[in-house]
Image (cartoon, rainbow, N blue to C red; front, side, top):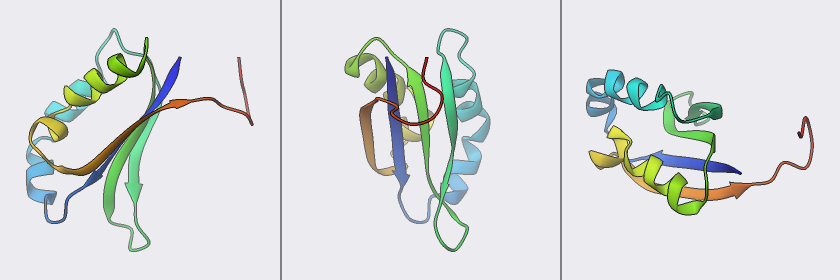
Length: 94
């Protein structure tokens, strides 16, 4: 199944986020995790306000575990997070 995993960043965490950039990229590159889509969320001002990914997971617990392994989550950079099952209804669906 596919799951949306998203995190909205706290204010003023840009420096801490940049310091964790390489570790965050390693988290995204895990060879045993299929990521269908991932990227930054930006506000009207163009500034990064969060991240989201659509991942393959065995269930909510698996998707939540992947989120909690993120260095941004582990270092308390997110104001809030969301994990939800993703059920595409429009576009390419296998």
